[in-house]
Image 1 (spheres, rainbow, N blue to C red):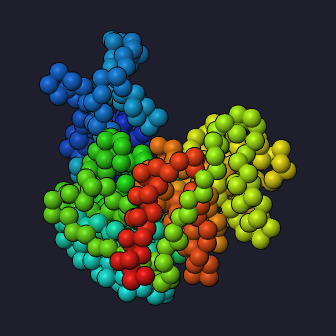
Image 2 (tube, rainbow, N blue to C red):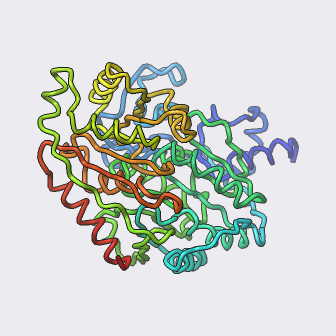
Image 3 (cartoon, one colour):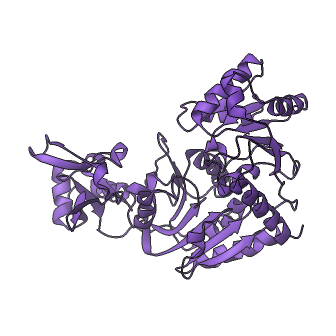
Length: 453
């Protein structure tokens, strides 16, 4: 075949993906040749199910998330999907292309794991369950307390998958988690080609055997993976956004195994038919989970309207700053975050603040990790997937609805994660104890009890 090198490049570029023509670097004459050979499958970007549109890339079928415009391409009024617009416009006249030529094989890499750490008894049991799940089509939930060492539990299972030439996806709801996981997997599997995908990432190696990605980035993959690991399966936005769940389903092969990781699995997930569940109720270092304490701080919102922070919170901050310990302060909203930050500045309390829409949040988080900043004010963006040594944690307005049981359990789980600093303070400052607060504390006590404490 003419242009064989370009065809090989196309096969690699489209490997396990379903892309728009604008995303494919190929000249028209080569494209025609490949289509004639039957190596490309084309599908309309939007399909009609009954009398309702559905986006093939993200699964959106919400009428309110489709738009119409006069299209320069087809010269007619064209519908398009607004839900996944940031990934490129999917419209009525656009085709999605996927490779259906000779299947690309993956190298079988023996003894790919170079990690020399030790697993706790609970981790060993879960690790063996993960390893077995990689060898057969199975759904497995690893229900592990915060700080149990879920990442290390995956290592031997991934080693088994790579030895069989399998391709693996680890999907997580948040960019911060992808950034934290990448160096750990890269050092543990130096022979494996790894790609880390998130909004704005540049590490997009098309032949990667291990893909670490936000769940949004999985929308471009199609029947690509033999093993799919969904980290923090209960977390927003994955747990609330059906299109992200659809994207993960589209990304896996029909014979794929699925492993869910969570410290706070939903009742819906636990009710999944044929789901195998393995629990790790104890942290890897053997210490119990810190129990949250409840601290009434009065009507903190009223106090802030008078440009004051609750005195119990100020006392807590100043006391721990004197001990040089890093502090995380969670607040219920971005507007509260800005207000708290202003009041802290007036008290000459040096700090940083982060939220999901903050373009500089990654630099701020790294500065906090490097201990260049002692106090970090944050929304729930840092409730999970991040580890800071010897951190002390407080929640202001813990009674607010945004602080669900799962969120509060995760927030408490930031404390005491390191063996050398396995204890710490977690305090819920409140103007009334909520059901979620009680449930979170009961959840943590239950796991400690199951862990033998």
